[in-house]
Image (cartoon, rainbow over all chains, first blue to last red; front, side):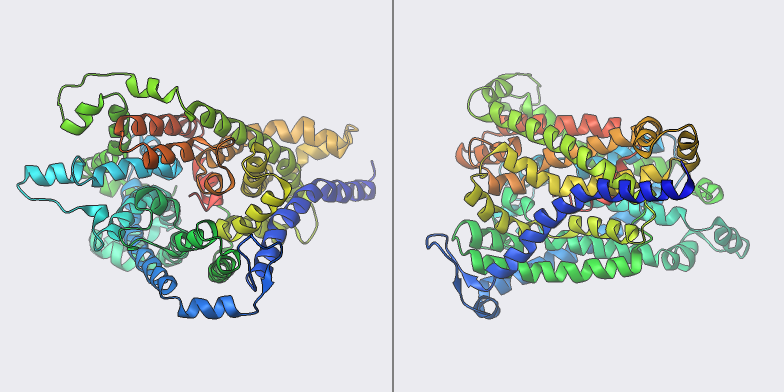
Length: 294
Length: 275
């Protein structure tokens, strides 16, 4: 084959092998995005044959919906809590894994397991841990002579329990991202610092932490995107309760759509969420396109 | 791996103790679930220190809808994995080798679909499925799993194909091979380990799905995670049975994760969303 012929064949081959995938994405990603947008301007409980046009009413109603506002606040609390936990514990884990341990690969794989395990299995385990009667936590507290609270049934504690569970599940995942960042730091800096008499803490504060800033920012953005969307843990562990204390945005959306069949209203909530995540994702691409090529 | 000096500096008994402690924190819940699934209910609730193993919970799972839901999970996961490889691998190859300007941008947008909140997609899917009669069917599940598996396949396989030297393909062309021929006979075999890892990750993501199955299935196509949550809600707190179901759902994922552990990191990072 001549060079030009190969180029032409390659271009044809390229588009031919790309088109099924692109067609699929157009249909299965494009359609829902457009249709959800259309629905968000309508009212529809699926009983009437057609959705009714209501303009911006759904969006306006959201601003006055106290339960929605509450779910937003609770999502924000969850997001801040989990992001804080993840930065601290993932970074600590990554620093630990960055040591020259024997069997390091095995440790890493095992630390990873919670992240790849079914959220339902994770929910079961932690439901048991938090069980007021038989759970590990209260058994231990009883052994110490303290009466434990009713964790997931306590309106003040339930959301915190979910944060702990989600943190346990995600630490290994984010630790790996931090680890990649750590291994990108040139050892030269540490050698120089040591000659100047810096200790471990000084090295961390003056070198590691500042140089890890892009990684930390990436972790924060990823954690926020994931936290905005928390649903399954809530569904499995608390069902939004007690008394709505763990109802987050996606859970509220789910109820509006699939308990009350307010499809248009739910679509509007979905669009608000989608908008927020879209902006975050764009930011992420702008700043971290490089990081995504792990 | 340029940090020999720094790593050696921190290694010591304290490091091993903390690594071991962390290991215990991670592993304990898994092991506890496992042992719970082999204990009679009265021992789970009453804390009999004596371990009297029983298979009664696993036996209890054999009746009712659990076996069928387990089968549904397996069929839906395997089918969607195979289909997404079929569609995604050639696309990934084109994006890796293709000399079109758009290829990097397309790859980024493909990944972006993994970041979009599934809930925003689900209402339109639910309505379309209701209209098309795809609710509570396995093909319906397979199609929705394709949307996220396909993105994963394209993203991962693209990086694996990037690792296969172009010169090998060019050599095959000089020997008279076509592009299809060099792709099938040279590139694909060299990317085979990556292909296997990608397949396993697709399987894991579909197998773990709870969200889509909860909304798009009822009884016929119900998957194992949904079945377990159902018997948590409707059959009271039978911890033993719940633990046995959880263990069975966890098992294939743990085994597969250990098999592809070297690729887990890139797979999960590209996977982004896992719930």
